[in-house]
Length: 286
Ligand code: C2E
Ligand code: MG
Ligand code: MG
Ligand code: MG
Image 1 (cartoon, rainbow, N blue to C red):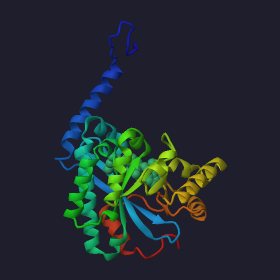
Image 2 (cartoon, helix red, strand yellow):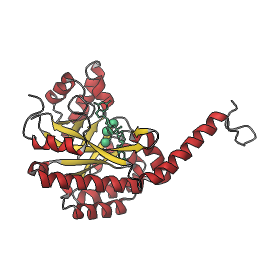
Image 3 (tube, protein in one colour):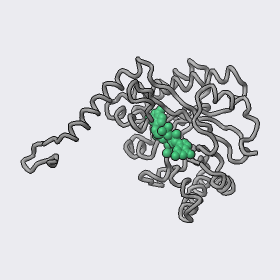
Image 4 (cartoon, rainbow, N blue to C red):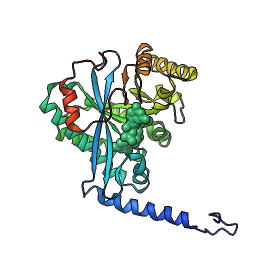
């Protein structure tokens, strides 16, 4: 295969690059139709109190049932959505779908009133905060929900990519009483200075750290430091990717308030989630 950029400055595509570019275009055109064809749905992964074992809320996770390629994870297509701007209509669909679902749960079970729903917000959505805020405001109103029931999960890179405006953006979201959760914490650029500068409510410890808790002292040191930092700044801490009882017990003993992971529950469909809500006062860990 030839290199992509020749010394004369023109681009030579080889067969594999052609296939990759072709697949990318196919994915993009499929994505453009996915919304109207109703090929997206959400799953809801429970988040539990590590102190009481009770259900605290859910994180909405996007899925795409592709007609030929089967069920796709957001990791397969969110990047293309972001590049093409499709993330704006898709992200709006996610917010409206998630809020509509929370309203249904609240109608069917009073226990759902106390739960939070976390929604992932991409860098591009976050950069359009005025639009994001008005979208959220009208969706919350339409489904009769309080802003405090919704948590927006953003990544460190969403902040760093919007560094000049991030402070104002986060203030606007805070003023509206939405909770802001910093997703995949510890994997990004990690400029600790923004943590107290910006209006953030929660840190989500990336599952890479959780996964190493059982094996590596260094991981326990890092996670302890993240929890101490969060406590000093009065932030809630959530651990992602809890798979084992020992991970859960270590996190709980070391002051991590909330947790999520396959060891507690896989992502659920809306009906399974409702069944869990109806048993919400029972502990997951007994
Ligand atoms: P995330 O926000 O960090 O979500 C957690 C991911 O970890 C989910 O993958 C979840 O299924 C997975 N997970 C949960 N517990 C465990 C565990 O114990 N072990 C392991 N190995 N994995 C676990 P998923 O659903 O494939 O989502 C991947 C990423 O896609 C998410 O990472 C999030 O960044 C993004 N995403 C998901 N839904 C949306 C959405 O609606 N909008 C946007 N913009 N991004 C989304
Ligand atoms: Mg997330
Ligand atoms: Mg995460
Ligand atoms: Mg993660």
